[in-house]
Length: 147
Image (cartoon, rainbow, N blue to C red):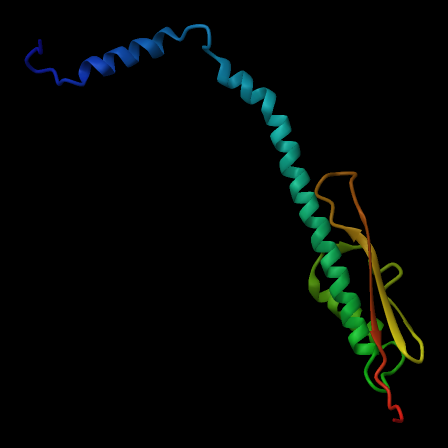
């Protein structure tokens, strides 16, 4: 029987309030579970960001090496054209690859091939963790040949 002035859903709300107020054996379990899982969640978060930084550093090094090969393989390209092009690329690319300027990009040219290598380290998100990055690109030198 319904009392005047009370809506039908008031019984359900009252019962839910009683259940929440009583708590039972599971009361306080959520904060404990969160305290146990939070370090794992943070480790996974920082590990995924570090892995992304390593892949960006590898991509930056590969693109710089390819830029060096493209500049050095041109017909009658001057000595150092590949290193200059790779250096310009790395300066414009930002800080994903660090420590590359110590040795700098290196390009080796033979009569038929060009090989450029870029080395450095990935940007470190986690203190004390850095990964060495080394990427090499190859190409064929443009030259005049007789048929």
